Image 1: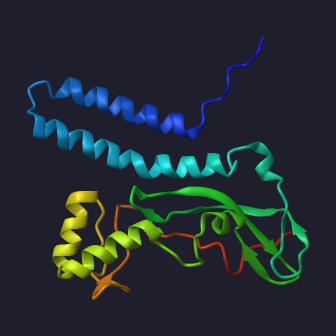
Image 2 (image 1 turned 30 degrees about the horizontal axis):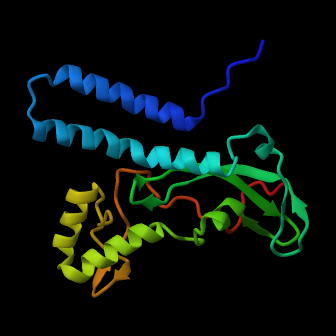
Length: 202
């Protein structure tokens, strides 16, 4: 008898959102349209980032057991290495904070690390914002003073464009854009996949 397929993280995340929607409906029977609109929007906003992260893992087959053994060529010497460890990267996209796990490789001969998944996704070494979110921030910042721009992004997309210290380290249009703040981890964009590794092992 065939075994039932194991649901992917995509399904798991969507089922969690579905349960929240069911609970919302039961607990807000007398709510008006505006209240339902905002409640459902908040539920989907919380779900979108993790769902996108799960989609990335699925698309790159990082959720397959074979990915744990997949070798990758060192960009420096070309020697194929096994994954050194798995690391989480958490860029901020138009869907919100988007965490996903991918293998990180280390070459002891070249003393450099790399994450092939980042290259496939077009993520630069220290990139925090997705290209699409960067465009949103730039367009909004070009039209409005940055406080108003930040408020608009928060209202329309649920994404705060201001960092913890209030700074906007990247420029967008004529105003500063910066780290999007969506309640993610301390490092925002998280691990970049480069640099030194602890416990260097091939």
